[in-house]
Amino acid sequence: MMRRLFWFLLGALAGVVGVSWAKRKVVDFSEQVTLASVVSALVRGVQTAVASLVGYAQGFFVSKESTDFDADTYSGI
Image 1 (cartoon, rainbow, N blue to C red):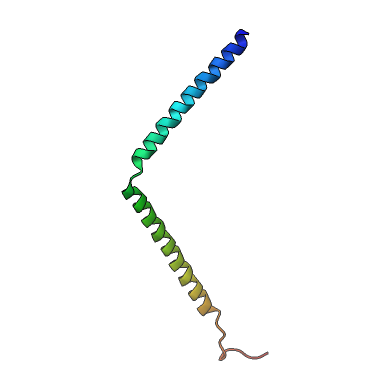
Image 2: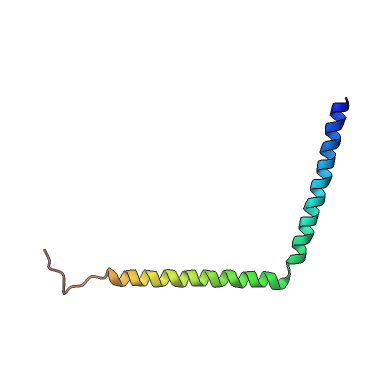
């Protein structure tokens, strides 16, 4: 009986500590999130996406130029 009571109380204590820790983390996170930080993150994401697309397009067109068919050097054999 005492063993079960011990484990029950230990579990309850762990639950209280876990909920307290999670609540503190949520409050800290909610204080950090502001409209300015969200907009800033969105702008950085869009800039990164545009830079990636531009880099991909540049690489695509450079590789396209190097593989174009050159009729002057084609021997036909």
